[in-house]
Image 1: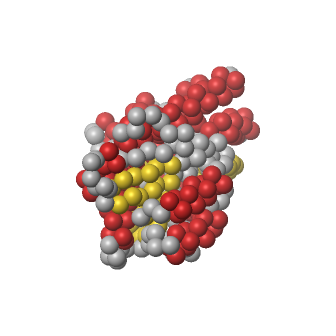
Image 2: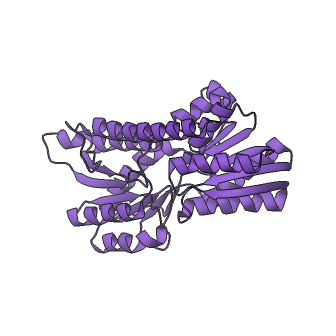
Image 3: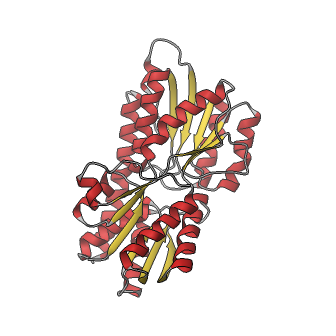
Length: 337
């Protein structure tokens, strides 16, 4: 593969992904111009009446992966008369996420939903919001030691084990695997890796050749994958524990014409198309399309003083070409428990 071409493709993909998120957020918000802070406001904000509540949603990074979450939240917010403020760092950046959280607390929003890059670092800010009477819901990645009111997502250890079972089935218990993941401090990614490696080491004779962390940087994910392939050319399968790694594998598989198994977490249009084309063997969806509506619904309940479950399990879906072609790509197949 021409590395320079691949890296330019990665930059182009990352730029396009960021642009798509911002355009989608602005369109959903009804904003006349895109805000420099990447803030979007739901259509409810344009209504002549005052919004019932104002909720903030903070993503770990700007990416088309979260577009389905934004769309789901915007629909629910419009129906409920809720104003949304949606923010995300350009790339996974803890300092930016902390500043966004601090700003929302100062603004006095009625509720916050956050996918924390680093649960320990953001825990004190979640507690600060709670002290100010602002309920906080975590989604995708949890901060269980904080005063958050609920976590929306899946049991990531069990999701990692499910990925292990999928690889086990494809390789019949033997083979060599490469693994890529994102931020080393992200609780959800640590747990997925723990579950995956635990299953592989406990139940199979599969050899995990290498695990690399790209820290949420698309170009690094691409370089890591190229490097692993150079170092281990006889690998049998590649496992992406996050959507950034999965997107990188599409570029590499296209450029190199590889005929190896590739599995990833996260289902977005790019991944679904790659499954259809055979570049991705299987995707593990966390049913991300449900998160947005659940965020709005349960922040409203928390604001009204209603008790909500500490864990809202959205389960997982295993998506292969048969599921895509049959139109079942987003059908839940099993809860994470």
